[in-house]
Length: 234
Ligand code: MN
Image 1 (cartoon, rainbow, N blue to C red):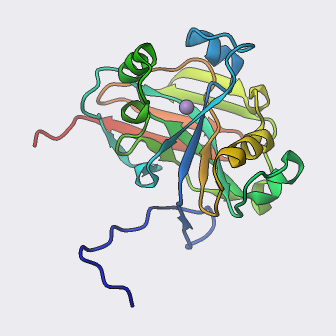
Image 2: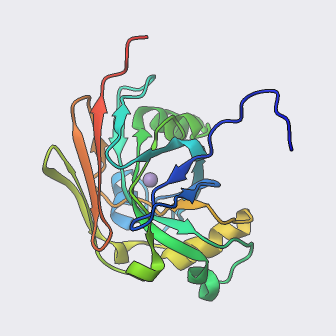
């Protein structure tokens, strides 16, 4: 039995719809700029700005219904409604035609972002980690196994803040579809069971403040709700 010099941290996990067993999170990958209208609202040209990849720490997952403490070191926290892919099988250089066989299930996600820090990082050619990979930055619903939902190739994706709609699009608007994202990601990293992939957000991103309730919905996958709460003064 392995001895540890510190108590090992708990393994991050996500609920699975219809099961008491949980999904163990290995890594969190994210796709940026995967809907053309969002690329344009961020000042890019979809024809010249290919989707990009970034990551979040595995323990950034924030369960449905949990409060999100307004993160420190930002004055412009943003929501991003996203489809999340949960992998059940790994591999590298996965062919697009084989990619969907690696999917365990799908979830509703919210890629919380410190937009001011991201804008500064872009301007200065610096990394996005502080903008994207902060504590609790990966909102995620229960995962729906493929056996119960199939592979959602189309379907409405929307987001509300305090009941007012802020984002609405369709999954078929993604520049790279799920199979294409898995295939491309697997060129850069050996993917593994337990990986989560946030597949990018549609247009309409915007700010959140303490007290807001943000809800993301995806047709066939249900909803994901978080309340933003003020940072504890500690
Ligand atoms: Mn995103």
